[in-house]
Image 1 (spheres, rainbow, N blue to C red):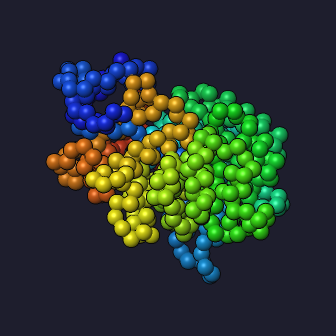
Image 2: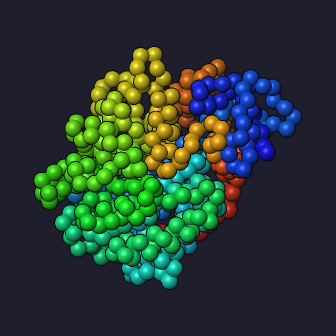
Image 3: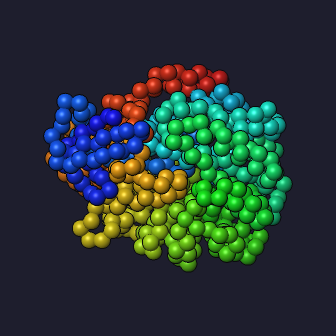
Length: 452
């Protein structure tokens, strides 16, 4: 049993003062409010729930900043993707593990305590399956164990290059499987994840353009009860190609042809019309929003205000990991709404309500559902995934309650995160991951040969 005492904390019931969390077996066993810190208590200022990261491609962290030079024509997601394909062709299993461990350590420092790793890199550079078909999944799991982050591994099925079962491109050969091959890969990946502390697994048909309707149904049903993630409607071209293929927009087609429910996380859904927005909210699926990546790639802006107003749930993800920051994702989400609607506090839930509180509550609820976390937040029985803020930071001085969240999300430059616990284990102290030196050393060695 370990005890953490906070001067103030945001638990499920709201803000409480002078609160002790008793942690046993990685979970919160007891919460006592209005108590004096005892001699055995580790004391901190402000306690918050860790934030789920619903969508990550960890290996892309090593590309950050390398795609910001203009090409000969108009740059877009599609030109960025070509650069990514060239980069991924060079990765070894050892490279993937080192880069992922570095990205995961950064996520913990940024307040993310669990990651949904959308894992589509399966084979060797020639497209040949490894002797262990889950070799690269095992590398992701090893990186999660090394960093201490909670992992929901989401193996991805990828079969085609575009709608209508178009033949995959040579650059996609590391991703491609038949349904039977993927079923074997998924089973092997599940055995890998079972060895992790509080690890879990989901499944992902990559996108409507990468799977046939028959493959979509087969893959989505492979893990009954587990999360199902899918890229959808990220780009205008994707919407146009879908209409040319079937006469319907992507989200409309999916909701008409698949049993989409609260197991599903539809990633991006950037280009949805008003009808699709309401249908998506009504079906219970989570919108997996990645505002930094969506801005970096020029994707567009998800209609978050309309979606939340219709009762929808969202989670946030770091996606390409060009910048890893839970706070920046939340800030970017609100600011893009302000820019498109030309008003302030767009996502606040009513008059006199805190925008920061709404963002954090929504990201926790939606992200937890998307990653299959049955009990989340600071409540008895939940995993002890806790973030402490340094309330001596100038930006947070003399704030209380929701004003602390608003100041942290919208006004703090450095992030103010002091310590992070994941499943009761301290993994960050003084704002720095406890294994950062060794993890960074391995990452640096990989970058020196990859970018030589």
